[in-house]
Image 1 (cartoon, rainbow, N blue to C red):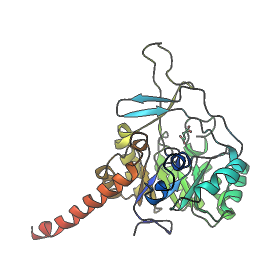
Image 2: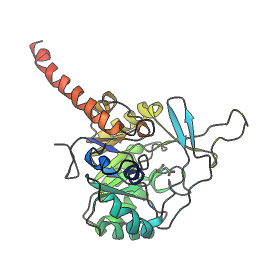
Image 3: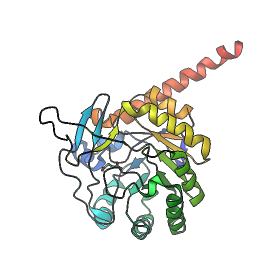
Image 4: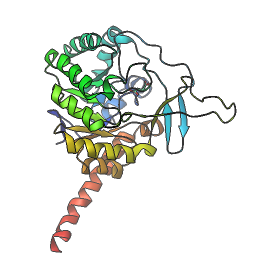
Length: 298
Ligand code: SIN
């Protein structure tokens, strides 16, 4: 059975933070969603210590083989999340991973202490890689800052800490190594690649914030290369993501050493993508296994 940091998973396919609104989906589909939930674990939209309104519109722009988002982490803040969203997310039939972002170590620590205390939470993802929030990237670009953050947070909980890495730095593997030295339990990669777009009608920046983060199939080769370099550098389990839209794509990430994969942008197009990709992955792994004896004969 697939697992991540000791958390057993029915399949190796989870969601990428912020790409699937499970509370809205439950409202739309009712308990049918719980009977056939598309992911083996659910990663929440990133929460911050205080509520955030997010960036001005437009927040999403479609690009060839992908999209750019400049969402800007809108959320209810730590207390709003704990009071309103966490009880609803805890009803999902899969382990819950809460994604957290803050701009100071003290604020990160406050979030970790409050979130980790809740038994509904299986693990915490530290988002040190959002390109759309001022100073969201500073820690995630720097191996020693990342290590120092983990040094500060590690003693606060025994729950697994997963560090979400940015691709927007020269050497993500060094940052992964900093996370490992600081005591992280896993890393996840990649977050979005910084990008921008011009509205062809107005000639002005297409996104309200002027720029955003690129995701979708266009980034998959970048994600695979960063996964390869991080895998070569650290022993930690890796959640691999970046443009996965089929079981064959997911198999590439697993072949490069990801422990599990996360589906993001594809869920915007197909909300059932997680289940479909898990099914496709299972048949692609089965066909690989049935091919083995033939290869042995050679
Ligand atoms: C956002 O809300 O801006 C996207 C989240 C992220 O990039 O981490």
